[in-house]
Image (tube, rainbow, N blue to C red; front, side):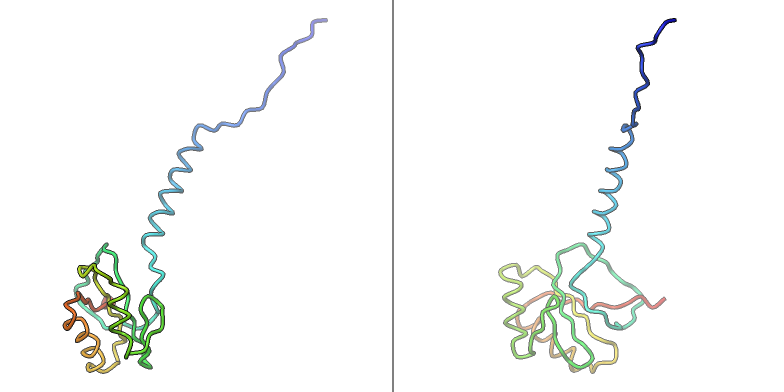
Length: 131
């Protein structure tokens, strides 16, 4: 009787594991850049054309009860200008996205935009797609 010395060794195929990890990493990187954590949920005015931007933005949100938020930080209207200027710092090219509910008065929007005009800042009004 002849004994065999060869034993079966279990193997795990790991050749495709690096590909899977690469795709998972790519997926999570894309998803994390799409999510904006500094947004307060509100109904925005409608627009036919929406421009998208990849620049670093500062979010200025105004709620229906006229509470002001800079990147989710509550700010009084009296301190809005100084808080905004300190947030922007020396980079005057930075864009401020104004998120204001559609049913708020135009005067409220004008009051905020005057801060931008006075300090020569770039303001953009956020809208939702009308489709």
